[in-house]
Length: 436
Length: 96
Image (cartoon, rainbow over all chains, first blue to last red; front, side, top):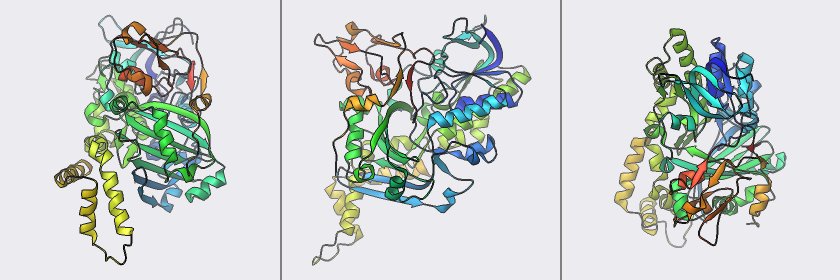
């Protein structure tokens, strides 16, 4: 890249948000540079397993014919666990096994590179192995581009779109995010394990390119968080996600939590003989709607993880789709603002309006209290045991003693787990409100 | 049903690192000496923070995931100076 370039827009980070933003700007005929610090898009990215691809309909028609998919998720399970028990709600559907599909597993190195390729094909300039180290400002103090770690590598732009991930130092420099936010940030650690393709299909009841995704609660030694397991073509990924404050207080090492999950009697048989191919770790912004930064300031928009757009709402664990949705909206907004000659915060205000009108902020606003409920101590430490004991009692045949009946078995499980009924009623009410 | 888990070194040996010349994270061990919790030691998923006998911290950036856990859990201002590795350097996830 030549010294000190001037473009319409510089997008920082070639993850899903950044590539979507660059794609929209290129489509609008704007001169856009997409800066990526990794050697290739996706090199720095880790996720919990599933891309929900509906938003890709706006990127490329019939995307499923070309996307680098591993498996199409046809089985979606939620598992409540204690050290010796597991209660699973396991749903499978043929509908998710054919176009237009629902969820897919993929490797981020493949998926993010594919999406960045769409932006490049539309005319965006991708510059890899380059870190945007700070913001440039004009004489009026307004954001006017980024400095990079290349010699003479300042990129002057009318709009900066910060898609630089959960640690977003650009959003922090702009004063949009606090320096640290451990209360709203979780650590995900993951092992990707190799198993032969046919073994995966036999163990998980899958055929061809069908896939499975299990989300778990109660498997993190009481630290607020959860676990996950999902299948790729010839690997299975298993990992845990834990709140940073809880992890710090626990004095437990992250990989010990993965080790305990892999040894759990409900999980171990799935992984027998599997060999670790890659260990990985990444932070996740789980604060949701209430922890989101201001999304626009003079000359700058924020999208994706940098804007805390991960949805960690128990039943729904989504992030890549929100990043793409926000990136598209950011690109459209920046293109319009440049055409109108106003890239101030007011000129970029259409970004938030767009997100409020589509799923990005609607879903986040609707589920703004859900993460608190999922990560609450009782949900983590008491209710999985209550649910497991209740079901175990129902299915344990106690002949010659007659059956107690559902209600009495339930209250027995409540007593056994030292759950207070008033807590249960209050938490149930709050959960209904949070997920309504 | 359980089997012996892999060792930590085996786990880390599966990860590709393009180690840069510049230490992108530095730790001021003098500041760490006043810290009683040293949460970084067990929270870092790559176990890069090692307590020393004099109450400080020994840190090596070679096998860093660049996740940010350390500076997020650190409660001593100025103990950890955190930047990304230079462009193209650092961790390379193939199956993230």
